[in-house]
Length: 245
Image (cartoon, rainbow, N blue to C red; front, side):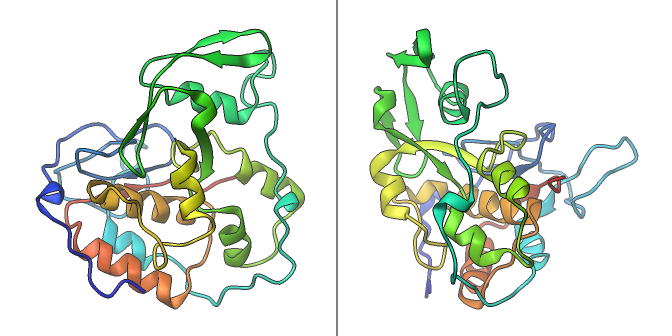
């Protein structure tokens, strides 16, 4: 468990007003936010306003919406979550993994037949590294597949598991990061691991919470405490999410 988080000046948050994104999203402030959509207006419970637009929820309040339950790892196998599928565009020759890598490029790579990528630039949010070779990227399930299995409140269908494992309808579920940082994270939750770039802590917590809320996943006691401590250090960070179908 995280006993105390010492978040330095990099996390003195300056929040800019921008529109909420059209899909489910964690909403976090900070210079390293990879999916930034922040608001300085008074936050309200995430949901639909008069215009039908979802409104931001303070991170601590969003944490309070998470169901709490013991984890259950027995029976887990990675193959239960089929990935990668053909992605959003079955005609582009790129599977979900490659589509995420293309979508998150800071400088777009060249795409050859068979979705072979060359060139391009990416920023790995977990460790702040600049990556210039797509082969050095992993596409991470923000909430790892083993953690999803632990957190399912009732066993999911095969279809739902595949939908999670390839979810591009949210900007949060999948993220392209350096292979080294993804493997350091493995299947750990925020009570066990945090990014090596402290300026990303608030965004990381908000994205984790948004993903768990989107997919109605539970947290265990240690995870809940870690998220509360992070939320206490991120008072201007907000969350918007859309429940998965």
